[in-house]
Image (cartoon, rainbow, N blue to C red; front, side, top):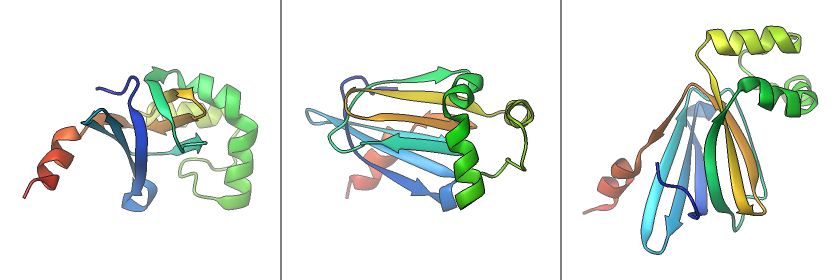
Length: 133
C-alpha cells in the first residue's frame, strides 16, 4: 500500500459510514485506500496533509488515547455501533472479538487521524479503471 509522502487529496465516507476511502496523490501517481467495517474514525486538519504512514496499532492504544472523546461521541451523537454504555475493557473485548483492528494515520504536516475497522485494502486499481473511458 503506497502512502508515504502522498498528499491527501480527499476522502469519502460511504455505505452509511461503514466504509472510508482515502484518496492520495503524489507527482502524477495516485493511491486509494479503503477501510471497511468502520467502527470509529477521527481525522483532524485533513487539508493539505502529507501522509507519513498508515500503521496498524493495538486497539488499546487508540482507546487509551481517545476514550474520553469516544464516550462523548457515543453519548452526545450516537453512531458508535458496538458501544452499549460499556466500560473501556468490555468495549475493547467486543471490538477484538469482532475482528476489528486500529490504524494510526500519521502526517508530516498538520493532519492526525485514526480508524478502527475490520479491514484495510489498497483499491487503487478500482479507481484507476473507473477513471478510464
